[in-house]
Image (cartoon, rainbow, N blue to C red):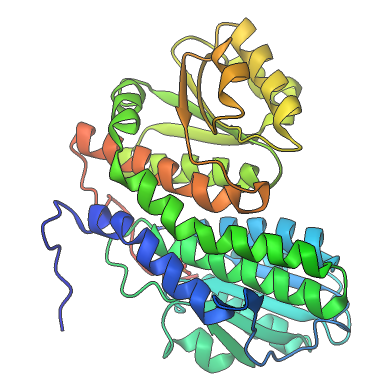
Length: 367
Ligand code: AGP
């Protein structure tokens, strides 16, 4: 049956509001809510013996893969590469015997990612695809598939499929960590519990987006916008910039917060809003000090954080949006939602075609 917009103005708005359900449905596939244990499906490689994991994907799916890299390295201690699919063949990385290739794609039809899949298969890698469409080309051509349970995504800008990809990748990381013995049982229980709480936090966040709408009014005036984050929030900063560009046509860049002082800080100017993703946790102090440097040079800092991080940021930030407090492990999932909402509201304010931005296609089937 055709998917409708229901009472929403755009498919994107509807799909943003599906985050809680999609996250819950996806997590329940891979984590048993009763025992809180990760239960992975059969995989085409052994996570205990695998020498390396090579991620390949495009656009937002590539950014999800970058978060996946942080997670897998952190909890499973497996070396991971993450490549933009269209660049993989030119980099021609050495691939170990028995290595695993992880392809991430909503459509399962993206030509660049499919070409990377075929190359990785030819080079003897065991291919697992994370796709949203079970009968897609990538699912067919892989040794194994894990599904995101996002349902059809109609808006060209990826929203719920992106967070569902994160939910799958976090579950895989925990499952790999358990299998390898690099994740202590108590830590596994803590992190799975944190993951299972994400859908409820996402629902709370979506209930009232008035602060994000206010922020959107300022961002809509800007010609250039910077997004900053550190660690697993760095790919989410890139995602925020990508979403804003594709939906509102405002020029935006994402940077690792610590990289600012190596060049981008020259762009700091009151006309360039700086959107900071700065949850409390081990990287908070360093990120906050990078932001403070930008504020001292006239930068207008608009920060997303939690209750513990808010007081320190309020000393120099122009706006602080407080998100639900979560374990730092799951913070990238929770921060992805407000940056998508921000891009959505800015696009609506600017009157652009939210569901069908210019020059873009939902699935890019040319290389
Ligand atoms: C996301 O908002 C984009 N429209 C785009 O970057 C997309 O994620 C990319 O083209 C990959 O598509 P896929 O997940 O279907 O492979």
